[in-house]
Amino acid sequence: MKILIAYDQRLVAECLKTYMVENQHSQIVGLVNNAENPFKVIADLRPNLIIFEFKLWSIKYIDYMSKLNLKFPRLKILVISELISHVLMMKIMPFINGYIVKSCSADKIILAIQEIKTAGKYLCPKAVDKFFSCQREEQNDSKLTSREKQILGTWITEETYNAVANTLNISESTVRTHLKNIREKLGSLNHLQMMIYACQHNLISDKHKPICPNCRFSASIS
Image (cartoon, rainbow, N blue to C red; front, side, top):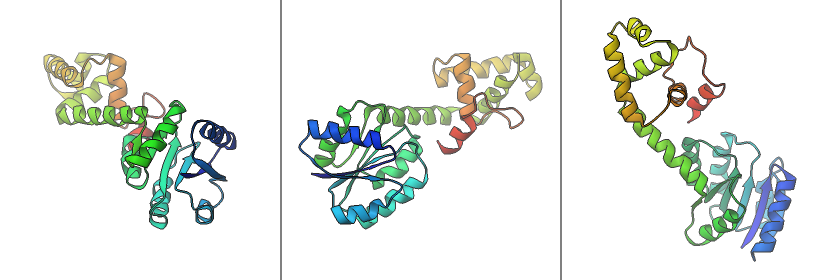
């Protein structure tokens, strides 16, 4: 199999090339910087597989992979990047053949190439874990009623059950009952985990700041 490596970081690409040459019989036909024009290099070298190494993921790569897939329909594409949200993963997977998180071990690259040769698709274990854990979160979130979401969001920003009750004009016992039901639906989450959950799912009113600086951003793309 003829392989082209497109990179953001030259050192990473060189290490990747060395590892693959030492552990596989595939032919590395070249290295190309992503800032250049991989389309032209692909047309010239005609690889069977291109490995994209991205330092930072950008949503623009979805359109980029779509165009690449249309122009070179027989070209196999393997992406190596930081872990992305499962929504982005689902959007890009129709246009690529494999996805590996950078923190995965190097042997997963060889495994990915072998799987792509035979089965056509590969997701590294960390990407699979992310995908299914997010699906479980969505399923849990869908189990919460609108009232439970409102109570959870309010409980995070108030100091006492009584304060939540006063804010929502309900009894304190009703607040406690709803929170008990929420814990049963979401699983054994501690207070901090429930705070993070409420923040990531945009259950906190806009007048309050996010608990962590990335929550609003994460919630908007995942």
